[in-house]
Amino acid sequence: MVAVAVTASLAGLRANAVVVRVDPLAELGSMLHAITHGDHHPRGQRVRGVAYADERQGELLARARHFLPLYGAIRARYLMPVSLAGRRLAQIEDRLDELGAMNLDAFVEQSAPSLIEFSRDIDVRHLRTDCQARREFFRRVERLSLSRLELAVEIVERPAAALAGLRDFLHAVTNDWFHEEWAQLASRLVDDARRKENDLARRGVSAIVSVSPTAALRRDPDRVVFDKVNQAMVKPAGSGLIVVPSFYLAPHLIIKHDPGLPVVIAYAIGPAAGDGLDVTMKRLSALHDGMRIQICRAILRTPRTTVDLAHKMRMTEPQVSRHLRALREAELVTAERRGRHVYYSLETQGLSELGTQVLALLYR
Image (tube, rainbow, N blue to C red):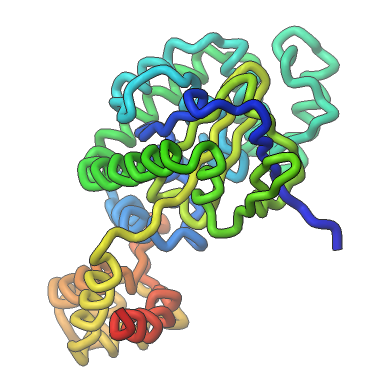
């Protein structure tokens, strides 16, 4: 089997060319990814439940699906920090203003890899002026999906309107979903950033290896090898390196390396002290009620609405809603809107982790 990895060369990389940034726009993109790709993002289950359960959010969710490729498998570069300069903690309003003011050619070029999910044989630098490259680009995007093609045409042929629409959408998401999340997360990310800065000051640039448990430090020449599904050699010595802590990014690690811009490594922070105890106790408390056990059984194989559960359990809808709220807060139940109805499903991963969590707490 051929090894697949991204290797970051440390040759010539000076300590002052490595900065740690807490970036709210990057975290907003990670949160949107967790909402729209929720099956493998356990940290996003709560906010995803809020987004899908609120009947007022239908239009916002539709726009989230429209822009989905930009924060999908290949994150658009402009959703990450673009300069070594700046404060450790940026403000979301400033980052959205920067996004809205970016050069339109750069907007198209940085959107293209996300839309096509990487195809190195197409020159995306001239999509607005090269008709042949544009036709081939659209043809490749169409292979992925028609909805993705719709967004690609919008960005390439009407970039000013597309950029304004993206900025307005991100403003709306910030107001409706993100501000409350960010108020709780920012201090945790800043604390982790300080620890990374101290680690870099103490150990030098080789401390970059600590951002991922799958990374390995290699010598002669000095480099860090990251276990990724793509193959690349990254050389940040010329442009610098920005390290970005994230909560919602888990379980991923993102490495962005674009010509003329600093390399970015975005990594998932570990659980805060007490997180394991808090989550475990919430789950144990939620399952202490026998009626909630019955509700879990009812939605294990078939997602159900509140009305359906009330009929099945011979309870009132408000009673069912209170039980579902407790189960959702314990991250044991997820909600998804389908048309006029909200369907609740059991989060079996949370249940399967419960025994391990209890044992881990006893071993502390």
